Image (cartoon, rainbow, N blue to C red):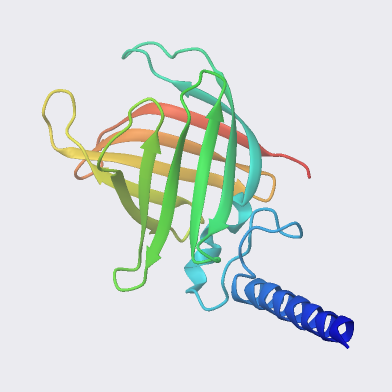
Length: 198
């Protein structure tokens, strides 16, 4: 009699445990999983959540930055990884660079302003307040983001980030300082990425 009671209780607890586990899977079904290692976008999000879809996954990239006004530094190999986070309601990326200067961003879309807000962090320059870029996808398919930044001579302008040549095979990236009216631009950083085959 006691053995049957213990068996019944054991089966009840196992059923509850399995039910809770399955319920959690349904609740967080857009998170990274074995089936979708980089997550998926939440269908209740605005369509703009798909802006980053071609970049979701991992790319092998080449990064090159200026060392002064006339010369570029050495090319640095890096992995750039994009994934959906917060159950498919935002996008996170991280770079793993051979030079040890890793970085990442959290990307959230706010429908009221029809803008992406990209919060950047870096191992090379830890900060108590994250830098934020704002922008959106353009009609030509590029994603363009801005952050106010003065030039070294004190002139007002923006640091402009461009994702372009976006496809399922990869993308290119350019960071440049631009004047307020964008009549002048000065590229400081370029990255070229090819999608890793999974």
